Amino acid sequence: SPLSTSSPFNPFAVNVASNAQVPQFKITANTPPVGVLPGSTNQAISNVTLTEFQTGLVGPGTYTTCSGAEDGVNCTPGSPAWAVGTFSNTSHPTFSVTGGGASVNPVVTVANGELTFTIINGSSTGPAVYTLSGLLVDAYGSSGPVTAGLNGVGTTPQDDPVIYTVIG
Image (cartoon, rainbow, N blue to C red; front, side, top):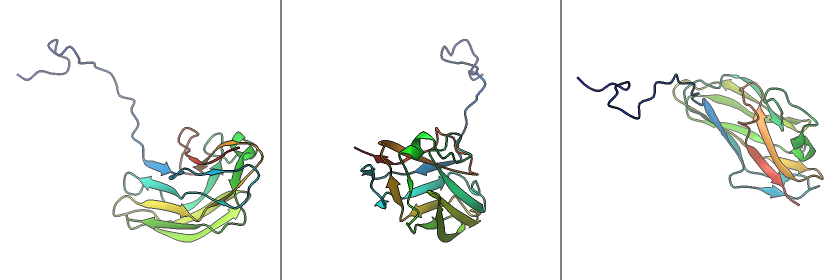
């Protein structure tokens, strides 16, 4: 009979319950990396993309970025990243999607340094890639990385990518 993983003849076998989590999506930003000077305004940064790994993981709805959110759910003005910078309220970014039969409203609202955008129909025929482009940011007096998560998508501070770095 074939050896089982618990056979004494398999010295590398370990019977352990799995607690692995499979990521549902990936947020990519700062590619290529962008640095801005402290105190600068309306500085262009790289696109932010959200890539699904399975169909329908990001459903229809309105979403808001959370620059420097400490809990990944509620935007937290005054958190460390907010001291470094936010999205520029004078920018006119756009929102787009490729693949999966998903559709979006291309208009992005910028208010209080955060972006709000809408997915009309989530993916239904395969995974989708959602992209925020035409992004401008305002850097404050401090230096350091600025991260951004998405409200309603279940990101945590560990998931939040660096979207740009204030250098100086």
